[in-house]
Amino acid sequence: MKPASKLAFTLIELLVVISIIAILASLALPAITGALARGQMTQTLSNMKQLHLVAQQMALDATTTGDTNIGWPGDMPGASWNAWATNVVAGYMSTNDFAKMLSAPGITAPPNTSPAGLTPGANPGRAILLYSVTETNDTSTVLFTSANFTNATPWTRPTTTAKPYGDKGYLVFRKGGDGAILQARQTGSAFTNIIGGVAAKLD
Image (cartoon, rainbow, N blue to C red; front, side):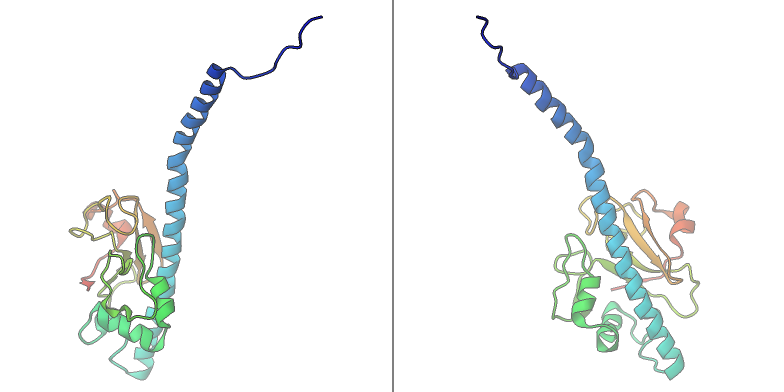
C-alpha cells in the first residue's frame, strides 16, 4: 500500500512567498503614505476655508459697522497674528474650535488657551501662516499658507523637517476664497501665477 503524499510548502517556497509579499509592500508603502498626506492636507485646506469665511465676515462687519478694530488682517490697527486671532475668538469662533482649525499632523494648538501667541510650525503651535491682506488687495493675494511654506526664506522649497507636511507639499489659500495643495517644487518667482501675490507675513 502506497503511503499518502503530504501536501506542504517547502522552506524555499515559504521564503519566496515572503520575499514577494515584502517587495509588494515596499512598492505600495509610498502610495499609501502619499495618499494619507494628501488626505491630511485636504483637511487643513478645509480648515483654511472655515477661517477664510471668518475673515470675510470680519471684513463685512468692519464695512457695515465702521469698527476699525476688525476687518481684513492687514487693515487692523497694529496688524499682527495676535490682533487677528484675538478678534476671532472675541466674537467669531470659540477658542477650542479655533484651536482645531490651527492644528495639523505634528502640530497641536492647545485647547482652552489663547491662540494669539501660538508659534507657527511648532508643537504646540499653529499649522498656518497669516498674511497682511487688506481691503484693496487683489483676490489672488495669499491670505493663508501652511506653516512650512515660509519655514526658511520666502519662496524656498520646504525642508523635510518643516511642520506640517515637510517637503511633501504645502497649502496656499487666497483672499478670493480658493485654495490649492502644491508640490514642494512649486516655489519661486516662476510659480507666482499659481501661488498668487504674497503680502507681508503677520507673526
